[in-house]
Length: 182
Ligand SMILES: CC(C)(COP(=O)(O)OP(=O)(O)OC[C@H]1O[C@@H](n2cnc3c(N)ncnc32)[C@H](O)[C@@H]1OP(=O)(O)O)[C@@H](O)C(=O)NCCC(=O)NCCS
Image (cartoon, rainbow, N blue to C red):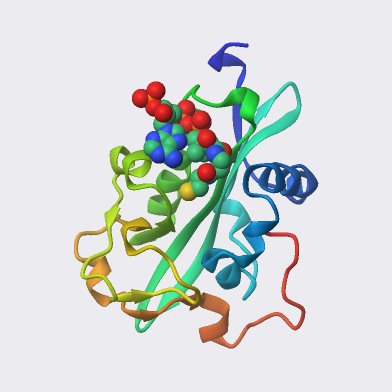
């Protein structure tokens, strides 16, 4: 397989089952206890800003984006990001993040947040959210893993307080929380 065989595309509902399987493989049952999962329960993700990598018609990697709010601030929460083990270390994860960031920027998003390993995400423009405690996740998170990429300088300044799904603030919360998103 060459990296030229990998196609990148916006996510559609037809990808849902494969994405759920990829996330189950990558994160196991513990994914349901994660802080980011708790937020994503608050409403749907942005399919148009979420992307898959496809090889031979099969989804082999996925990244999702979800609109979130904290105080007056708005952002996209990036994740989960997962790549099938057989396709790791080919640059697919970083390419997916770069594509999602580009789409977010074009959509007018000013800030992207995630929980993840700083050494992996730093080359993609993410750095630790400081001061620690400015952004509060609904479940405990190692503050060194709470990262943000400002797509517009200074956008993190107004993003402060408890992070929730943007629909919770807008009063659009779905009656039934989603169960298909890791
Ligand atoms: C983390 C993950 C998405 C990386 O995807 P990938 O396509 O293999 O990554 P890329 O090919 O884009 O990048 C590989 C590089 O990142 C490094 N890397 C991978 N995971 C890393 C991590 N957790 N921390 C730091 N560096 C990491 C690799 O060592 C490699 O470095 P190199 O380029 O110097 O050789 C993938 O391993 C995965 O799905 N893991 C399980 C789920 C997960 O942890 N998701 C991230 C949640 S924040």
